Length: 362
Image 1: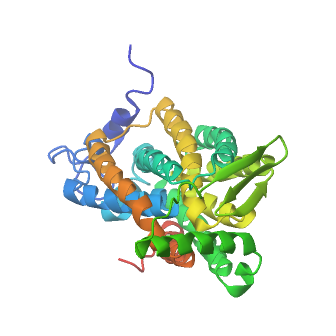
Image 2: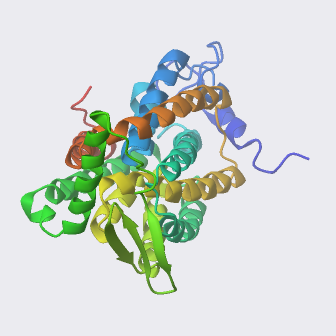
């Protein structure tokens, strides 16, 4: 027996007015995204290449994979404009395509998070107890957010809020890289400096066992977890990342992204980790959140374009293998500034598009 939600997309397509104009479906045209006649037909080579970029950026900085996946689906592939065209004529189809975009983003980030977590763990650059604390909280946040928002968000709302959160984050991170923001991060700077020094030794031909100098958990209790990284000791209360995980994953699941763009600032600011640890730790926390969000979306009847996702996952796998191996060649501050540039670009563009229907970037 088919589940009750199996025909939701088909019903939405059937209810859309037929014709050749915006917000209409032309049955004579070939099927595109989600099998909808006349929907955008995504170039699979472009999809693969974009997915490589998504996998690389997420596995390098531990964030922005979902944001870049969203940019690809909404802007590069033209799915955003297509979804928006049904806002007035067929709201059900508008929301169905929007939910599919949200879920598609999460599939890509989920695979990248899985591969990145494994690679960073092997390199000694993943704080497992911290990621698990975040991940447990993220299960509650992701489930609640998706349950409350699935099928209820129009594309314009989604795009606007997507940009607003990203823009706010970019502004905050800009402050973080200033002299005032850096003044309170002595531990992170010391650990980053030690790590960068070991990389320089490797470049000069000296053998360095970086994994042996990586994360070493020294104490685990209900109130304090401590670990060392390149001789620098860090401590945190596991309750704080648990609460942070709930809030961050709720926002991320609503936006249809991994949440790394919020997790990384949380890890570098609240937990005071260097970026070299934030990427891997964020990846594992994101993986837990993504599994929860995807399962919840599927249970709500969200449909996906499996051919497109399959091609993208191949690109994600390639980019995610490359990222952890190249990230060590970028300085800690450079990675943050790359993060900021992307945040400001995406944030400004999507706020204007979503809330004001105004484009400044094409």
